[in-house]
Image (cartoon, rainbow, N blue to C red; front, side, top):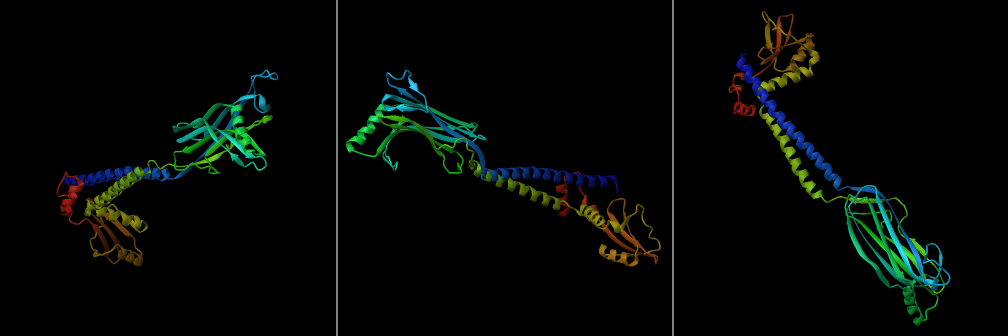
Length: 378
């Protein structure tokens, strides 16, 4: 083989490998992008769970009218009070929600005074007008916030509400009833995810201060529907970008499939008889390595009767029959490989793999592999 022929062969194969490498790298990059988008698409539609704790409380003071019995302006919580000495009640409501991870959420709260008149034995409410003390406030908290704190202080005139209760009970002549003033802060917490679920499926909480309305002794009581330091589960489904991710996944997946098809088509279209010859020889040697012995020198066929065998399988059958090794030799031009079995009877069994029409394969030099392949197959 001349140097020009060697160069034509090397250029063709190098160009082919280069283009196949480019297509392979492009396919792998796009495939990784498609897999990443698929992962994001799957997870944006999947519920995830975040632990959180919450607690609610209310502190209060009972302010007194001027009297001859107490020097203090007010009396603190957890005591019993004389109703006739009460001027006003001050209440300080607080609520705290602590999340394990930042989550976008919306919350609203309000503070109301509820004047309740109930049956003393069954505690069923007969009359319960509501008087807003703090109008409802709604806030969208940013996702960076992990802690929600609400604090609101109110004051109510005890005597006014006591009088309102009497004006309802006395004219109607009601018996066996008790009146109370409920100071309530109601908190609604809503995640901007698809669902915000706790074990009891409740996301509205009330912190209440119960103040009996009476002319005698008053025992103020704080109640709350907020679980004190109880861990719950916040379930969210993030669908904000799901549609866009779905479209992007399909587009990038389609591009990766197109690149893979292009790579396969290009590899098949540029496989000329020279390349097919190399593939066929390498596969055959790899499969029957234990039966083949490679020799570097050309076998001297002088005096032998040469018998050409059509298939390598037939050559294997002959080898098994006469128990003789299969010798392999490739010519210097790397255009023909011969597998031979010599016998003592001077018969030489030969199976050949060679490049057909070699002179026509590399007729045009210095051209890209794809173009040369198209002209070779034209």
